[in-house]
Figure 1: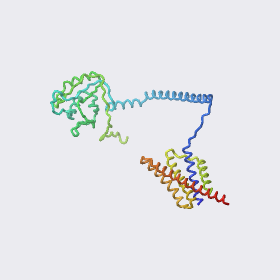
Figure 2: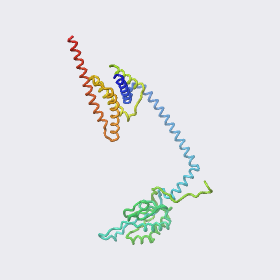
Figure 3: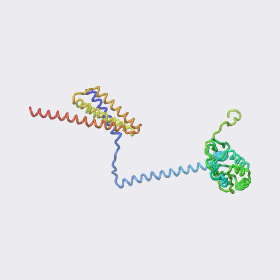
Figure 4: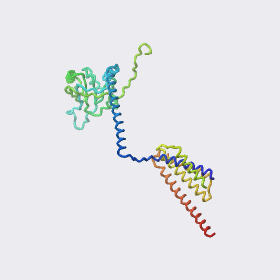
Length: 238
Length: 120
């Protein structure tokens, strides 16, 4: 009897000791007097000043690297990348432009009759073509940036632009151009374009704003999927 | 009779010397295992005093209780219910009962011995 009992007692003791050690936290009383505390404080301050000087030297190094980087080829590459991004529509654009407002024709609303709520995709496509014809650079419809691969289509009686649904009127179309004079030209051309009449046929009014020197066109925020497009191989495997 | 206590002390010394520490999140399991071990130990002592001690029952009960308690605590953690409290409660109650029984047995033994001494 005693052997197994003793063995298990050893085991229990072992477990208790481990538990005790796990739970126990060292408690050390602070018995330093004022002068010792001051010394410790001095030491910590020295450490702090050392750390500060280290930070300063690191920051200097960082700014040196930054200035070196600016003159390097990498910067040129970055600039090119940024240009390409702007061209592809991945950046927010702020600059001169006009805004177009698409809203239902209020005079035409009859009591009890349903109000037109949908802009048909064909209409939007025609509008875009017209805008492009008049050298619009950056276009966003209802906050959705239009890029080269954008699709505008009707899905279950809902007009969708790249998955973004146009739910209600009025819809704002922001058009950005390069400079204020072309914004003015665009505005004038849109004011006399056929688009206004085409919208009116569908009980919608297209109002064209005066050229605005400061318009923001949001960036395209969905991931761009490129299918069926491959880089050309130049001279074999390169 | 004193061998188990010596064993206990040896175990404690061994545990303190090895300086093993268990991660904070597992200390729950160990504490419940310790409780189960205590329960079994006192149960064993009581059975010994009542002369119904069975080695197989004792050894199997020791390991089985520990494993059961730890797995109950584990299950409780994963179910979001503090099931280990059930084990704590059960073992706590049994611990007290066992200790009470041991105390009574020792008291009766002590008093009978005293009476014998007085008679002789």
